[in-house]
Length: 557
Image 1: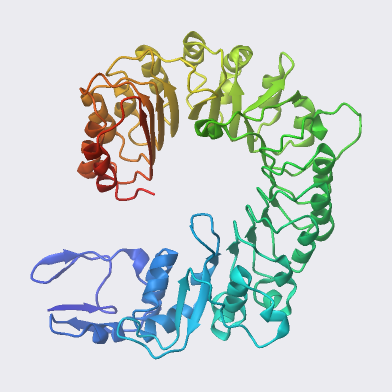
Image 2 (image 1 turned 180 degrees about the horizontal axis):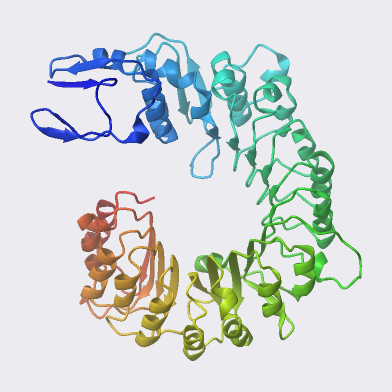
């Protein structure tokens, strides 16, 4: 029998229970306002009796540490848990109705008032299902016109319990849905989330165009807006944002192919814009700070700026949309002196000889820098090694033509201590030999993302990666590599924090080094965090080896 007295027992003292077992209660789990209650648990005591003595504050703290799916399941445990969860708005600050990871339809919600079953003890059951049934909406012609995700959202926000539950919602994800933005014009919706909604994600919503953004003007608390991949947004949409959403601070406009330089110039009207993402906008060839028009512009408060193209698209077999234009670093420094994050992913610049030094020295608040490294940039990076060491994160994408000797120059100049990601424009670029990779790994102990071509490496050439980057490396992409069984086992056992592993064009030496050696290492549990595995080989893999992958990777997505 075990006893826990929340008043007489010091929570920081280890208490023996269950015949000598020691349980230590951390300080973070103790609320000073808990009432004095002594709980006596006997193996024959019903769980419901224990639940009745659990303080409400303690249950709320436990619910706050659960992910959304587990929290929804917890609401079906008992009427008390359902009541506590649904009447605590801070537990429901995020709502995800996106179809980003779903197959075969939208997520519709049906509310059933049927009597409870033993498996669902609550009298009013809320379930998310993938069917064509329409949620119950108020009997009004205005509401009955909405279907799909729009009806789902209205059901959640306008029902009596939902209005209380989501009254503090700060983040709403409607990615890849047929959302109709006119629902944000309804008075009931604005009353619930108009002042609290801070972040709205409309990634890939085909029904969102420039004119429909006008319906968001009632969201007074909106600060972050994600419009990436909304193909019908053009320069007019940016004009609407500047006129009716002037309080926006974070704007994601990536992969909006209709945007031009003229539309980007309008963003300067936003007084509080802190972050702008313009990656993949291939029509933009010259940004306003690159133009020599002599126009006077005030200082912008922008802290995060992202341009160019996602380098990882090359792993999908597409050719990159290169952004090549003349770039004036001194003009950017004068216009955006508060930059903290600058991502120039897959962007080729026609820089002046001292352009990189001007950029690094002028933006003295810069913490994160991502850029393309070509042959002409090696000397500038070596001369700016002191400024690179002041960064918190440095991400480099190696352009075609860079040699192993030039990478060695960067290592000797001590320019890579803050290197966190090393990518390549082409997976066929051969830079590394065994000694080059070892020197890089020693010089960049904070690497989280590493991509390389292993054509010139030996069977055990990858061992330094598993030996030195076990605590930091999360993504490892290897192309054209020949590795022994021992090397594969070293990778699986030496990289416990790995979340993404890509092995393409594995050069198998007969059947001497199968992928099974890598999978067998996973089954030890050291790669339990692995979420993505991508494998390819000219000789293929056996069914037995591949069957072990999901077994050894419980977190695989």
